[in-house]
View 1: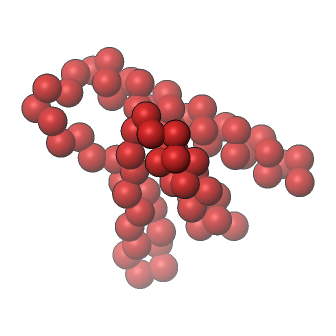
View 2 (view 1 turned 30 degrees about the vertical axis):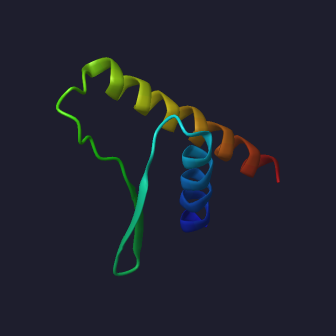
Length: 67
């Protein structure tokens, strides 16, 4: 179940185009990576990205509870 939720989160976040996550896997552990690559990144940029991840995760978790 956790992998399916992470895959859905990845697809939704990348589809909206505001931020980008990258999937990774080590052994059986599937996870999403958020990398900060610009030297011009500031705290508000990180906060925006974290808020996007939280909002999208909340939508997914809320909808999965209703199923």
